[in-house]
Image 1 (cartoon, rainbow, N blue to C red):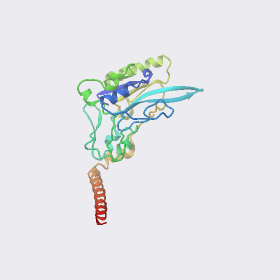
Image 2 (cartoon, rainbow, N blue to C red):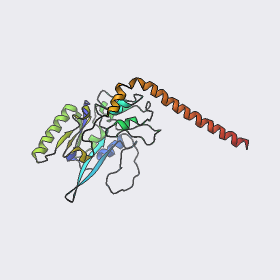
Image 3 (cartoon, helix red, strand yellow):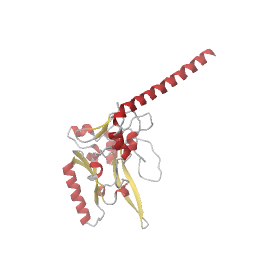
Image 4 (spheres, one colour):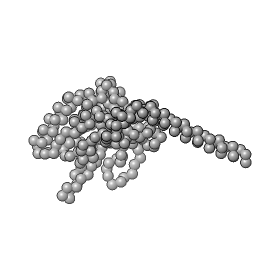
Length: 263
């Protein structure tokens, strides 16, 4: 588990989206123009300029609609499938436990998104890089909390050492259960070897749009253990393919220019 973790207590979330806006501001990410599709959730999904968002999960019970709000971004897992499967080792873990992407090394293969149980790393097109929350790497290195937790007005999102936040989360779950919230539970402490984001949930994870038992696929583990020696070969193949595509494009372009000049 990461040395520092983000604790999200969904029972305190009022979906103000302050965390979402703070993420945009700190990382200088542009706004995205969206359309109303029947939900207050906006934008509708993560993308290369939206690294975090508040999910508006709606569930009907006995004719009554109930909201299950959830701040959602990269989980910075100990067992990080994205890091295991990256063919060029562009994804790594910092000393504080944050999982980050080196965009100078990323080749936009998309393998990280497929390997992540939460489908977190995103890119707009196949030829673009993968992007996600970097756990406010520079803020944390300077001794500050993440921007999302700093902005949260209700205390639903907080940041601190793993031991401190796990103890706080366990106490909160016990308190909720005593108050009659029978399904109150922790999420992220044991999952995927311990995540950099832990939740206090009032109900089952799937009610909040989270996988109940997130796992890294066998194929991803196989790639890391058995296929890793072939990474260099795979990279060579990718580079050769890119060069081949460029050569074909260039040849066709020259051919058309010559034909145009001959007319």
